[in-house]
Amino acid sequence: MAYLLADLATQTGSKLEGDDCLIEGIAEISSAGSGDIAFISNPAYAEHLSTSSASALIIKAELLDKCPVPALVTENPRLVYAKVANLLYPPRKSDAGVSPNAVVSSLASIDKTASIAAGAVISAGVSIGAGAQIGAGCVIENDVVIGSNTRISANVTVGYGCQIGDDCIIHSGVVLGTDGFGFVKDGDTFLKIPQIGNVVIGNNVEIGANTTIDRGALENTIIGNGVKLDNQIQIAHGVSIGDNTVISSSTAIAGSTHIGRGCLIGGLVGIVEHLNIADNVVITGRTMVTRSITQSGSYSSSTPMDTTENWRKNSARFRRLDELARRVANLEKTNKSAD
Image (cartoon, rainbow, N blue to C red; front, side, top):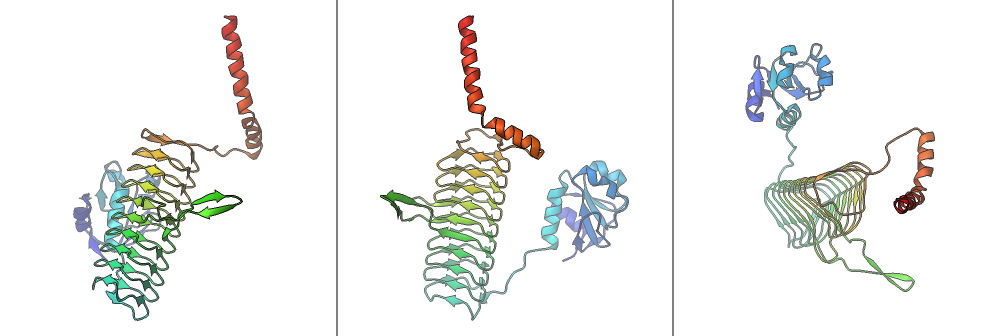
């Protein structure tokens, strides 16, 4: 799609400086050409202003005097860039209707404006809302509810009884509603514990490729409104995630942990079971969370990168940390007695 720069300014809440022009695409500032718009959110890229061939730029006001082309001026260039990108590249919509190569139960309820692609399997009791899109090869088991305008990419499995809200995006390979990992030792073997809860997903949620969300053992696994999940995340049974929390790739959250609203969780984070994480908590990448977090703030663990030689020395010393702590405590006791 193409927009006049003035229209983009109006729709993104930014200020147009310079002449109006037609914008047909968006690109990196170093590679943008005629008809493109680019943005600068990091001042380090200001050196590209004089050499860029973009037709327009998205910048902060302090860079305006160095900008040789029309500009959208804003305090948050990255946000305006995202809004412009959504306007120029709207999501593709599939044609409404059910492919003749889909398998759809006569007991399913599918809105006439929804789209069901070839190879999808829609089971009895399923309800699919207006404008929803179900990709090729998806399996939607019994009694699943899928809200309006939700887009499910190819080869997604949604287990029985799960609920998905409106305006969600679920990428390929996602599995929702698998059994949680629940077993109890019975002599030398393990007895499986039935997982009888569901998965309930709110509105405007995005779930990245190959992420897995287990159904609850007793209570539902709950993903709040506006949550954004990256690829290859594991969310165990009975977990709840508050509204507008964002979680990066390869994080694993163990069962019955409750995560608050507005949290930012980095990649490769591990969170053990039965914890409570407060609202507005930031957990940096590769952190291992072994206790509840009761106050908002930023939390980290793991060791920063070092040379291999230093890392090996420090690792050996770390193994003696308990011994050293005991020796210090004993010395403190001795000093107090001497006083």
